Length: 350
Picture 1 (tube, helix red, strand yellow):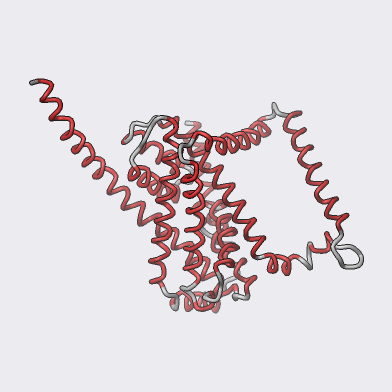
Picture 2: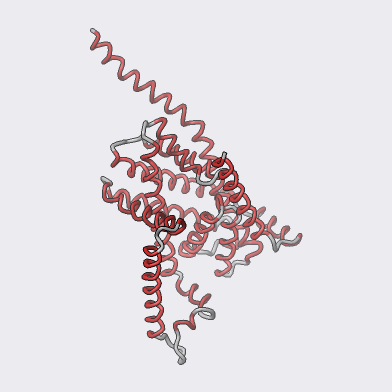
């Protein structure tokens, strides 16, 4: 009973969080702005969602292959199609019940591939660890390729932190900043060791330990080059799908693929903080493209909801198809396997 109540509270929290971000993205809308947003969406080229969906489908396939590579060191070799269908069904379930999709995709392999579900939990942790690293790389590349934009946005606010009285870069201030980061690291480490028995500290340490364990699993993977190719490929396809989405709206067609890095980085944060990214994704995309002289209303918001809709549609469409295909494909596999075994069985009896 306690677990059911906890689950209900959790789902209610996620639903309230999604509703909050939707409200936050639409709170400034009046009748005139609604009309402008509707006009911008009406003029959008929805045929460009086709290549967006295909790129997202390819990224999901690479994610399934990467997950399969994490399973292989445990002595199991699940079929690629079952891994893919499990990934898509997991995405689909996550739309209605955040985090439950990870359990469901493990359950699918446990049923159809006879891989113990409890052993698959570690692979999910490993996946998330590498996604964290990849997202950090995306932010790093964004800073590298979009430095002028970031500098223009922050120079009036935070740029003074690293400038001397003569307006030039102060290496002393940079040194103090680095020293402060090092000091923060040692203080955090001391707190974790000194009060390690406190429940919240234990949970924080567990998060970092799990991430580290997830990252170290790459040592046991057979083809490390292929694993890194799949990881990079996933995020490159995310980037391309974001860039293709720009062409759907006239006001954002001028944005480059390097501009898409910023949108991908901030949009990924939106997908994390809100269930399915609803509300938060569109809001962060709207704020990001405003840096590139795209009017936040209606075009920035229209782009945000359009890109989000593309991802939502991919989860719904491919997830539904996966639900239908999963039992049928595995039924055929069982029949084929039975046909292959039967002759040998008869020959032994003869």
